Length: 427
Image (cartoon, rainbow, N blue to C red):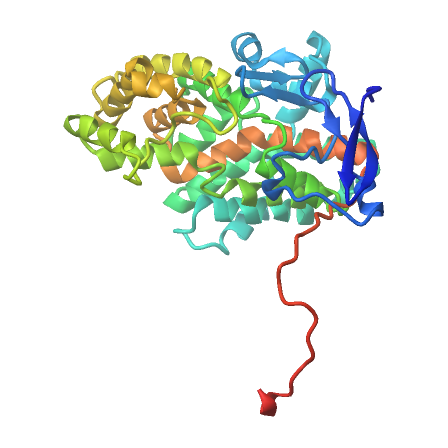
């Protein structure tokens, strides 16, 4: 806590408020003293409120900075991999060689799910949205793995964390296979995390899987770049659910439900919907003109970011991965991807977009990659949830292992004042 104090004057009374300083970032005024004086703050969306203290991730949207445990996301994406980043988020430090090997082996040994889960899937319609299925099956894990649900036990929390990270690719692939009527594929322990996911997504029992290493590398980067993003809507949901003492599987299911909202996790799916709406490269100028028209509701999806006011630091890494995937698959002439590349060029060269800092963001490039790999748009948010799982778990564990209170936001009541009940025959 800093030596600075803030003062607030209300009706001639002055209240002294504590000021807290983090390692980096703006100071934070503690307003808890207001309640004892008959006041509390009004902050729709909690956009000006720090609801917790955390050591996991830091974002400076104005400067385009994203740090996990102090490490820039660009360095992690270029020199690390997804499971090493998972370790960093969970334990607060990068592993040494022995620690990483142990962690990777633990994840590898927990990729299978209880066989009864396959029966559980049969309760869903085949045409159910994959995110609807994921909400159900992830929450149901607590019914199959209830041997380690004591949230006060550090070892139990670690086991649950490993199980969630290990089983999410399996459940995601099972969800996809179920919706297209194909048999589930067992994970293969000799494959890497991203290779295993692609094997379970696109493999079949009739022939051995042949996973393209370029696609596996791109998939690993997608997971890594989505691993955590500080106190966003879904992460805050996980923390709020966790503050009640709910088990980790239920909390992550709540996070998946929050991520499902189109304003949060559906951005890369919206990119593909937009490309389909444009339909042909000859119509690009028409739609760009519509995007510039403030009276036209059409918006170019995948450009700019609510948090990053300059550029999305994840986008540069994702752009390189997208270029590698398109070159590897020879898809430079795919109609939708040609539209995407032309829009990218316009956004980087047109003064309208440059002045407004509407650069392509991570969702724009991840959508292109997933489309190129052959993953349907209905699965995009599932993959986002898969990648975000270690961040959710890290925040949940950080909260549970420290001191916390049950979440209880207040409200500004604007309904009727007290009134007397009128019997039905007199209304």
